Image 1 (spheres, one colour):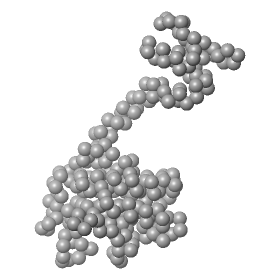
Image 2: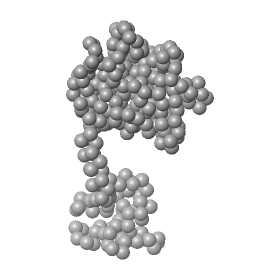
Image 3: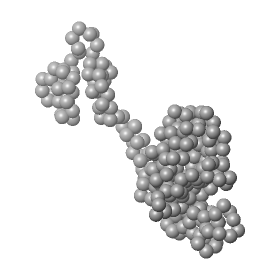
Image 4: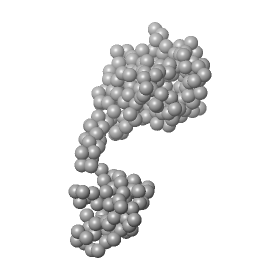
Length: 253
């Protein structure tokens, strides 16, 4: 507290007589505005008027005990719900998932409910590599691309996540990346004001086409495969992202 009192004295250019109660800031000459409130505490609004942004920069010092407790409790809740060692990825660890057909299944699976404050419309099962790729895409592409739309991105509508099946739901052929917990399909984006942008209707719409194309392109890198409306008839209404890797780099269409 003694150091804080000295800081007030030096930065607020007030009179300080020593370590006792006389170190309280005096009223600013000629203003008639006291810098000590009726209960003997510092009038922070007056100090901010005198020193501008400096006092605003000290707001964490002045945080009320209640606000501090609420922040600590929030961090505890987030830490308790974190998966993949990342507090931004919220959900639950479910362990190994066995597949009903050969080639399916997920090792060390997680069920994700939200990423970087953006909720998923349904809890989605995947491996941690896919969860981390999803976070990278949301932070660096999805949220920035939609920042000017309806108050910003709040929810992603998940069309598909883990499912033990073959590609394009065929009866024969290779196992889909969905069957390995390495894929997620996204069909729409809900904003803070409740408005929604769908891939099907928004891909060519004037108000959303640029944002959707930016998000599609931004997924190339975090994900190994990125498919959208231009890929084929199976992806007209959603984005398909998976973390399969190729020697030639990401495959994006």
